Image (cartoon, rainbow, N blue to C red; front, side, top):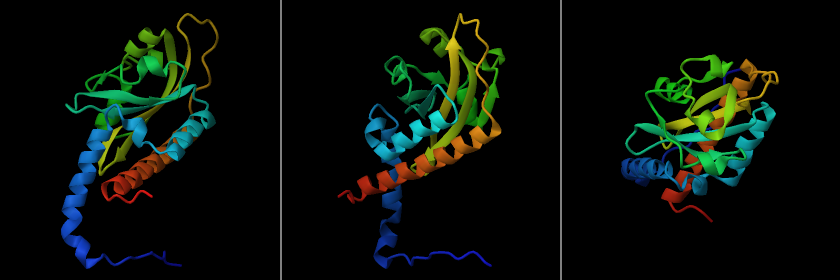
Length: 200
């Protein structure tokens, strides 16, 4: 059976406004990548992100967003206990680290035994006195453009002698990609509401 589509004819009067609306959404999305990102992130999106991290067995997750100069990714949301030491404080240059590789390549990454990978930038681990054992990194787009990366990690103390936690699976990555895509859609809906003053 052929797939049925729900079609809506565009309102004739809206056509002339389309470029203006798109420009406004892009500009608002760019501004939203700053320190007020959490104010834009709908409550349902925040809960969905947190539930995703729990479901895939991550110890915490982070939303990294590109800065104005497009030189670094900045953590704007983190679900972990040390969020205040990371969010808005750290900057991940685009020329190093697995997070940046996911952004630049526009490809998701699933990496276990992360601390054995020479591409890992260990600055955050050193700052927070931890060891990243496994990582997922999924690019996130909203406002009609790639804006950052959602990451999830499994950690242990830097001096711990305990075995590494079980790594992420390909199924974990697929689920994180699905949730990240939904988060992008929720952010787009919020941007449209704000730009067109549709909030009730």
